[in-house]
Image (tube, rainbow, N blue to C red; front, side, top):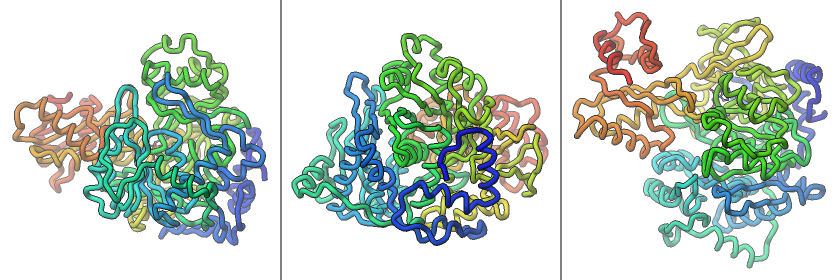
Length: 635
Ligand code: PRX
């Protein structure tokens, strides 16, 4: 079966088949990948436990799909183009042959350092080709990578390392973000105070910030590579993996507790990311594809590394930020590397939009053919700006809805094929069976309706478990509604059957496209010495999509409110990382609670949104007076 759909009629046909005969459909798609041994059984599943097994009995290594299989015909095709933070520094290009060589070499480094199949390796690195190399080298050996985004704090890293019992950490001395230098290795050192499981830290040179290199534990990447060179073993045969062996763990926030380690497995993830990449972006050989995400998030895993590379694409990695040295940075990159496909986030679009058209002057964007958006709802204004100013009205926009747990794109237009509508993720991709349900779990049929978004049938890229805690996986995703995967998103289906994601219906915030659990932020705030309790809600933010609004009970402020606010921010930065810092902190004498002690978030959300006209029934509150005080003090 052809991997790529080429017309809307074909989409409709393929979609129908994928629902009527899902196993046959995925069998046909999976034929397009390289397997050492084919599967005995396409799918076995139930959403009760849950138990989801795709391509059982098949043997493969995803890196043979991403690297080896391209060497013969496309060895000299650029696999990765890397653009540095500082535009005056040279960019780098790695062909498939070179990338293959470097992955094998680094896999041998890992082997020399005791890494073997099934071991967990934490990766905390800047956006350098070496990050992709480290990820692929783990996959080559069958080691399970757990990439942690460079913006997370030492405490967050420690939590993740402890949860996965990682024995090896790969990092760099420091990283550059605009004018800032982030001391990654120092952060790792702080984290490792709590992590006795870690026996080895491999440190790449980037900023050459002074770092503590601990004898017996820390080694330099470059020295280890030299050792492999002198050993003279450039190749590294790929470990044979079972389709359902773990490929990686990626931590993500939910509405309760600490982040969960979402587990993806080798076979299904490979097929799903490759299939969705090829289709949604309608990738053609020779095109340059630029995804602006960080590999620390699922978008980077699936659509900078695995998806594009399994399709032999040229994927561009960018180390810096969109607004440095100026707000024309993305457009310079598009112009310089003749980018054909640009995949970015609404928050970046809104931020760049706010600089007006000046940064676009003199930039040739005519190479662009397709545009993509991901991570949060895209407002119509941003959609139109992206369409008109960047795509010049000639580029289809794919608004792609999906989640860390999904592995790959779920509801999305196929570029140039699915008719689009601003603000709509449009239609489910083949193999994806979305349903809208009401609070009682009844499926809402028909069009022109809205409800909670669930998926009622498995797809190959879905999570299999949450690391070390299968019950948590069941509770979080499969227990709210029987026999369905619950996304946590609200959604409407319009008269044409088009889907529009309206945002989270649980206590998860989406700040600049980053998922943040309100409970996590509250826990961090509550760790500040003067705080008694707190409640965190989201509010609409022009650039970030959502901002973090914290209501804090802190009766004994240390010196003054402003300084205490800053102290609380610093506490959150220490515990989680800068991305979770509240935008607003309002000190209150108490929180609105029901008589049973439950915080009435609905009321706080309305106040944070500035909509205090109708707060609903407050008579059931323990102390209704507190609402007026909070309302009057709103920021
Ligand atoms: O609320 C949805 C929002 O991002 C959440 C998933 O976040 P994360 O796991 O970090 O993955 C982000 C990148 C895949 C979803 O539950 N979201 C993601 N894409 C969209 C979106 N909301 C609206 N439109 C989208 N295109």
